[in-house]
Amino acid sequence: MAKYEKHLRRDFDTVLARVHDGIISGSVSASYEDGSDWTAGELRCAVRVYERYSYAGGNRVSLNVTLVGKGEDLFLSAITSGGSQAVFFKLNTWGEEAFLDKLAEIVETL
Image (cartoon, rainbow, N blue to C red; front, side):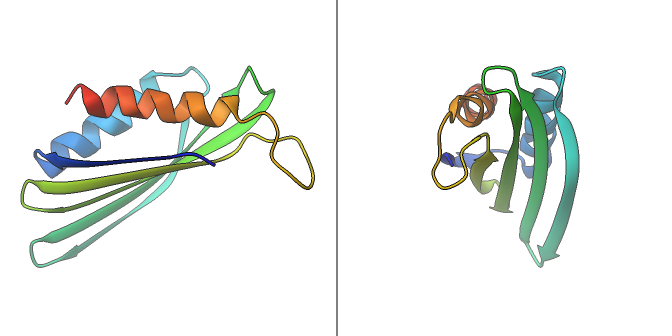
């Protein structure tokens, strides 16, 4: 499991759209699995789950992205999972790290 977190001062909808578009267009095997949106007054929260095939690891990995914001004050948290072929411990986490690196690249260019 790998994690990436970032505070941002941007438009919520713009960040969410750029993250989604960047992940989907960043890998031929990337897919949007599901999502959830919640609003309470000015507070917004969006959760997105993506999956892709890791050629390096020979397996599928998932990426959970949570974006929370009030106005332009945003917090993004992303956590990967999967990618290991071992039963009792994690081996081969390259796919998780590569998926997370792609997300970090998208966010850092905002």
